[in-house]
Length: 210
Image 1 (cartoon, rainbow, N blue to C red):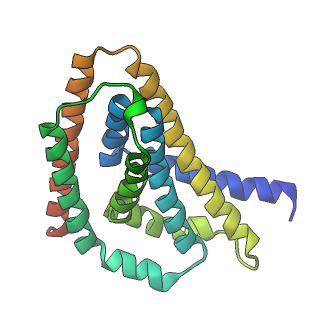
Image 2 (tube, rainbow, N blue to C red):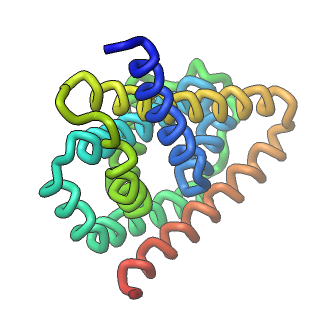
Image 3 (cartoon, helix red, strand yellow):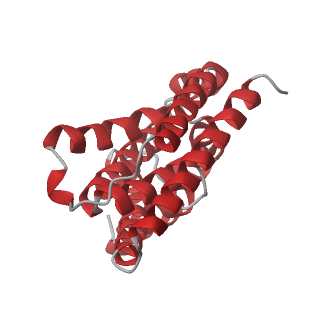
């Protein structure tokens, strides 16, 4: 495989992964809120949970696993109900919770694991993510036939592109955190909780429309 083709496949996946991750949604608010309240590492692991699922869905689309793609698209409504309900509960919990502004040293390993696994679960049940990769299946798979390495490069690019977006977001939020007063952080936290809850309600409603 030529270096030009290698770079082209990796870059294609990177651009698509970055673009999908940068689409506004509940995880954006969740990641920003966690970074501001719990620190950079918690925000980063939250973002990497999303990137993991983006890579998973990209693999299904790129390797042409049509049966799985169809199954996920067909099941998007129950997934939207489950994911939306969890988002509503999470948003309400944030609204009721007193935002913590202590140093990140208080974050435990269990809390970091939860930060990663929770966003994995939320992204898996996000119908927008499923539809995005189903719609991009042809683009992702273009020029990847006849080899295992070619689709693997596209998937790696998607994973890297998504991870790059979350790293940029978390670094920006952590730099902002150092400039904000505790009262402003609490205000942003409350706004994030409200946004997450509202987006969860919209996700549930979308499952029963159309």
